[in-house]
Image (cartoon, rainbow, N blue to C red):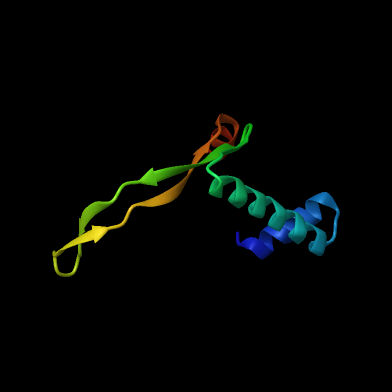
Length: 90
């Protein structure tokens, strides 16, 4: 499912226009992004938790040449599924 399909499904389920569903989805994603950028976490009970973790700099290998390369440190987003979400999918 891509973003436009999700907007269509939300609009149909909630009985609202596609424009309103798109605005709501963009608001959710924007607020999750802002919170994570500030170093916070977002937890939706029953669905999951997003957190930001720091990945340290490390030495990797170029798969084509085998040469050592330096990989910079960076922040990565992690998602841990909640029990209700995991149970629904399994």
